[in-house]
Length: 66
Image (cartoon, rainbow, N blue to C red):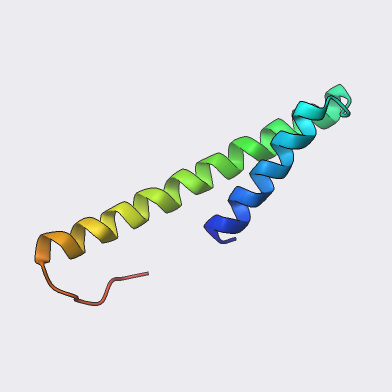
């Protein structure tokens, strides 16, 4: 999934959890999914940070690895 998709899903889960409409099992599943999404978002951001550092250190516009 893309970062934006993960973030949107995470926001949806938070809204559901805050609404109070989930039972305990659903809340636990939502929490577990949310933790996984947070980890994926953090990894994506770390990757982007490294790419930005590579560009700014070199001062050029060399191609970046995906």
